[in-house]
Length: 125
Image (cartoon, one colour):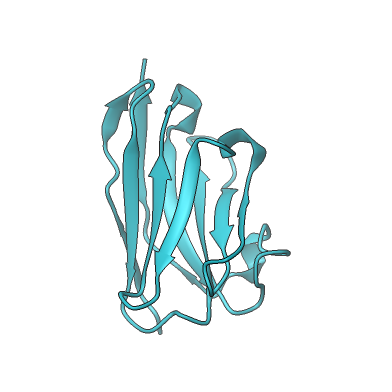
């Protein structure tokens, strides 16, 4: 059972940058890795995904150009670099791993095998 542990969430001001990290307890080099988020009173939503090689990325429209997902297979980690943060980015951010999809088709929560516990990001205006 792979365990995923997120870190890096905090309270920041509008326009700030923040980097989230997620560490896996086991080798995840064959998994697509993603970030999802859930705001209070809303459903969990897809944010970004990266394929196992790190060569293909997909982002939800609202973060395209502001967020960058990356991975380090040697360290079994995935990161989310966030910039120009907005109040609507406030949410609990989760990392997830999947062997059921590569990048395309990875926007469905049911495709993921493992989830972290989440890290809170709060963007204050």
